[in-house]
Length: 141
Image 1 (cartoon, rainbow, N blue to C red):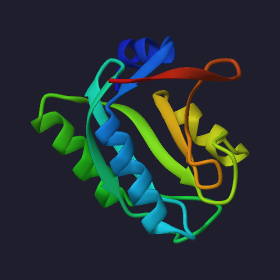
Image 2 (image 1 turned 60 degrees about the vertical axis):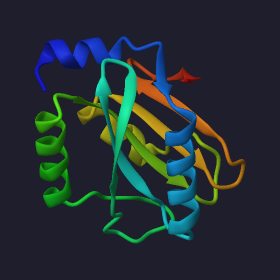
Image 3 (image 1 turned 60 degrees about the horizontal axis):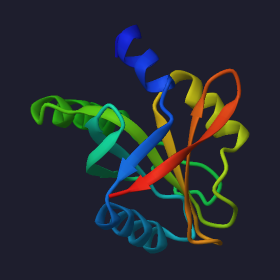
């Protein structure tokens, strides 16, 4: 990612996702319990148009890691489809949809929207990291 793309994404005020994509992500999250689930979100600027489901190689209910192989595959797939990586998704199976300290650390090196699904509240929230973590609106279309 070049600085121009990163800056544009940091300035996001909202992220757009379809109801069907939210359903895919929530079902995937429920099926991965008790562990966190994760995915990479493809699209343009602030509109999600495709989901790349990934494996949490940590198999942990408290954290997630996407393998380097899947990350490379995701970037290659996005490029082949003429899309960008516009977001990172993961679930918090046993807590609210708010970034953990670990999430915040990784948000610094991945300046895109972070969407979190709460396995407790069954809701989605989206965040970006500016000087602090800022919640952004999720628009369902």
